[in-house]
Image 1 (cartoon, rainbow, N blue to C red):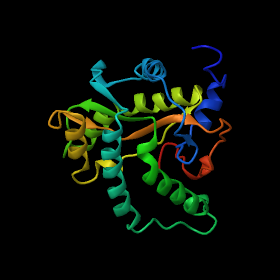
Image 2 (image 1 turned 45 degrees about the vertical axis):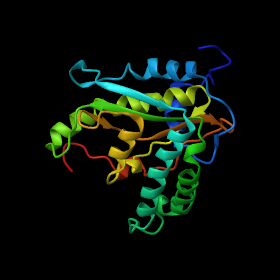
Image 3 (image 1 turned 120 degrees about the vertical axis):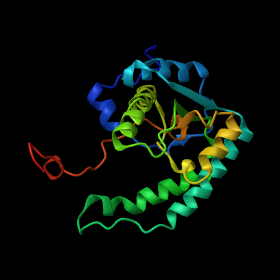
Length: 219
């Protein structure tokens, strides 16, 4: 990685400022394949159950396929918006941020297809109906690498957003048909727009204080 590609962020800076980027994705700046592959080489250093490395990574640049995937996402997002949102107590930071998050998510649903690349990470197998331990182990063999990929993007001035709405209902099967993914033998872990970001000055997000979510020895 050259000095021009790196933002020269510390580890702490990378992990605390890697955001789900939506409105600040630069849809007009091309993203070279070499950058995608550099980030992937880093991401697949993540742990994977039994060292199976059963992941496959589908990057989509074709305009028609991106539009078809975005249509699935948009339809499911419309359904999601109509669901009853969770209730938060007065003063909860999550309630204060809700309007901004909804606005950002709505923007992405309308513009997903404009991202230079879409990524669909897949893992061999299908955990449908599996016990909790099996399901946790299954997704634990993919999601660490997916998050590492987002961190690698951030370190190079790119961004993404972790979305799963296209998987709702028949969406995953429809996406599999669009991309030629073997639906019976591979599960999709999400849909990620990839683009350079408009500016790189991202900040840590507001989160619940650690003392509200931590337990030692017992709940």
